Length: 392
Ligand code: NAD
Ligand code: MG
Image 1: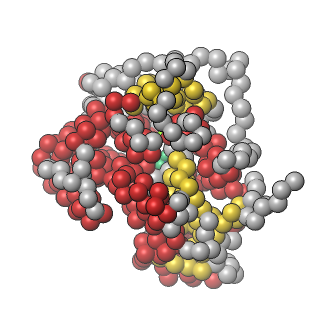
Image 2: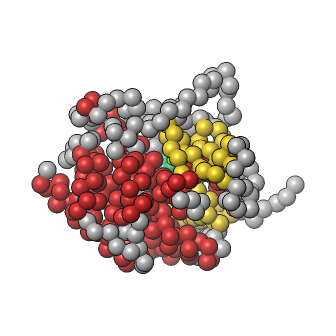
Image 3: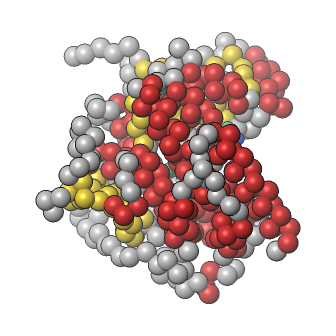
């Protein structure tokens, strides 16, 4: 038997859906994994509960106004966990020498700077925060390559492709990658039938239990659009070698097609603990708490083409990727604004792709040469989105 020095983990987005799944896997293997840092956006109560259970060295709350309450809460619990706050604290923790592995599970562009810090610092980086790749894919991939960071995608499709790719990363014999999409809760409906969709309906995903933002993205198919851009960066694939197929059962998590006609697929239950276990232990395998498939129950696997007319968001993402430069960053920011407005009943469901399309039409995209240029494009798109919502 081999003994391991436990991998010291910083978990950003600890209180979320991915964070919860990650902690479930981590807790199964105390000899392998130890929690160094737990971080959340603004929910101190939820973060304190996790600190009580996992006793991290450091707890970070992104919202600086909550620092005093986090600090007091840790003291009241009699914990020696150090309280920190703000994005700078997240970036510092991502690069800290006490941390081996960073799980990037913050939702949205807010996750970019800490993810980038982990990539630059050469950590093992489990990437759930797909928005950071959409916003700054080139910079992030360059940073990871330059530092020698081990980047393991934990988005289920990309994790599947990661597992099906040649072990040496050589993609010459790969003809194309095929991302599967569940189709979301409104698969099979017409556009007209989507005019009065409520947030509760959009969040009720048929197969996966996830945070609110990604659930809405799955319902509009923008999630698959973001994932196409994510795959383009992760696997250095041009758009012409990335296909999307709707697979309502969410059992085949994605596929890699080779030159010789072989297609390799990764299959499993729709449970993110599998992908997190792959990321945590790779190239080893550990128990994730997820059972294998029951072939008498999972006995029907269907595939169909996506409906781009009802779900224009997927095409918008392909278009933004083709435009290149800062266009994907703007696509992402416009979508974040639209989804947030939809969740607050300030935008209709069909208004989400409408806002994104209007923004991409109106705004000039420029070269994505620096982080500043990308963040400026992100800000311009957010300002456009806010103005659009005022007018509509
Ligand atoms: P969630 O809403 O459940 O959790 C989000 C987490 O981010 C929370 O811990 C929250 O406190 C934290 N957070 C929010 N705003 C923040 C800020 N400004 N600064 C710091 N922290 C902040 O979301 P989720 O479903 O866990 O998704 C997280 C990321 O993983 C997203 O990028 C999503 O696209 C991706 N992802 C999720 C799933 C899934 O099954 N949930 C699958 C694939 C990819
Ligand atoms: Mg996914």
